[in-house]
Length: 364
Image 1 (cartoon, rainbow, N blue to C red):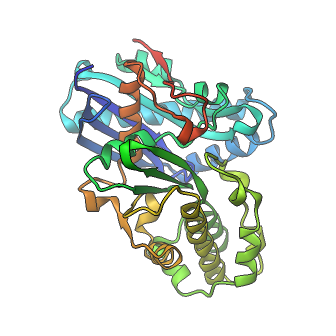
Image 2 (image 1 turned 60 degrees about the horizontal axis):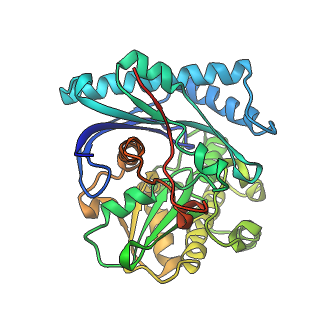
Image 3 (image 1 turned 90 degrees about the horizontal axis):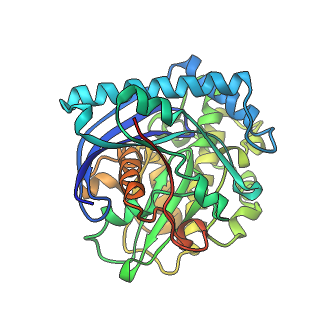
């Protein structure tokens, strides 16, 4: 497949909002970012999505309910609007876009039970926009025995093609994940643990703010070593990669009773230490640690990662890329690969038995 225009959409477990990116790519070595926008969710929308996720985690398998249907309608409408606004700003006609990669909103991720659940109606989007849509990008992987996450490693490999090996890309969203790329494009990836999720939950409960802006609250606190050890005493960290998490697999409960600042500091240190534990499971130490995702804006977290890991984390902007756009761009890239029948997950990234493509295509 030659280079085409593709839109990628991402709404992460941090529930910040909808990210939409327009790129030109062939799904292999060529990637050219063109436009990006991010539209925050309202507090009411976040509450709807939190309720849906809380409900989904009580199910033994995905099934519909009024709350899930409401949340899916919300997700679809907000993503439709984001695409329309993105294309208008970029002055690109819908007919010139080959495909949209629609990740949807993860409300539960249970590969241990053989399922993962992203809500959002790709068929409705294709019909409304008159553009092909690829969604359900994780389902085939999980059905084949993989973890269904992380999926961005193949895009990370493309972004870092010119860098000396080994190199690692750390994505700090609600959950953290790391991609290691070695000689000959060898690739290993896995979730490292909570990234922003626990700190966000803590700050919301303690202060009413959505997140610890710049890590300023954590910077004024003291890390409680006993509670940090309790948080790190979790079987996930001893499990060999590839491995993945649901946002709800960890809790901030051990920090209850600490001051707002001490709790933020302790949970931020937990994220940093989980990254170091992840680095220990890589085949070799990376020469550079490139950081994408919202966590790179948290100066306290970045400092703690550097101290814990003994390697200075670099925001992905050091490569000339927009770290806010990376995930959305990645799903545009993977949608193009999906249409071309190219693999998007690999034994070293999700534990799937063989490299495989994924996604479901909806045609207008």
